[in-house]
Image (tube, rainbow, N blue to C red; front, side, top):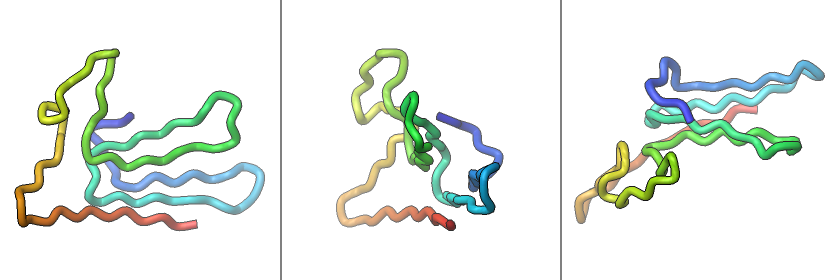
Length: 83
C-alpha cells in the first residue's frame, strides 16, 4: 500500500509483448498493489482510505482517511483503466 503519492497513475508493461495496462486514479490518495504468491496476476487497487494494519483492529469511524458522507449528500470518485 502506498501513501503520499507523487502520481495518480500507474502503468504496467510487459517485456514479452507490446500490451500494457494503465490505471489513472485522480480522486484517490492511496494505492494498493498486490499479487498472490505464485499467481499470474497483479491487483491494482486505488483506495480512498486505509485498512487495519499490524494486526490492530481500529473502529471504522477512526480509520485513517475514512470518508464520511452526511445524510442527503453524495460522494463520487472515479478511476480509469486503459488497455
